[in-house]
Image 1 (cartoon, one colour):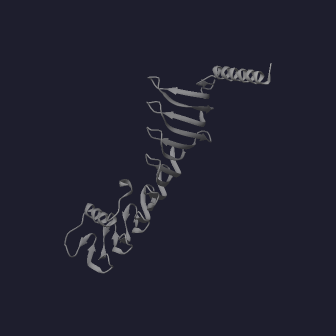
Image 2 (spheres, rainbow, N blue to C red):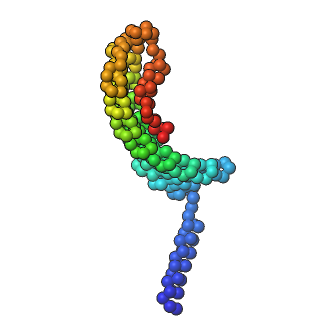
Image 3 (cartoon, rainbow, N blue to C red):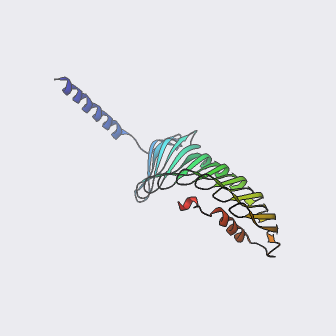
Length: 258
């Protein structure tokens, strides 16, 4: 028998041995204490695979793959610390990664990244107990930062800056418990200031200056709790948001319109 024949024989025996071991592997085992142990594959009532992973003393351990009704993996989680911590990846129907981050006790925690259907980064967000807490950065499809803001318990709270597609600042302000508060600035794409004023409890308050693109003053308007002295009317929240967008969106596109 030549060397090649000997090598072929060894390979065949090894494959047969591995195949035999796999064939003898037990699935969905429950020990005497009623705990899941070892390799588990769970199926739905119509025999569709739901998940594939391993348990140690009833706790998920290591890699778990979760499947959609179409049989496509929609999530992969690496479990540790008796299943309390999971590093997760979510996928869309086409199998593209759309989100990744850490779970603690099945709640989003720490840094999470989200992607669009093309695989481009959409946002980077911080979580605690399944709520946004900390920095939130949103990106244009070209990778340029679009928004940089802070959250506390899922509410906007802290400074907020928005950018044009070329990186120039188009808005600077701040929020307290999801309401605009304090000095607010809007800019033209050229970098020249377009509007400056202040909010109080989410309503325009005090003197607001509106500028032309060349930097000259266009007009001044005095507001008290959203009421314009010139117009004599109360601005609704919808009207305020419309006014904001008028300056924020001028000569640019929002990230979700890219």
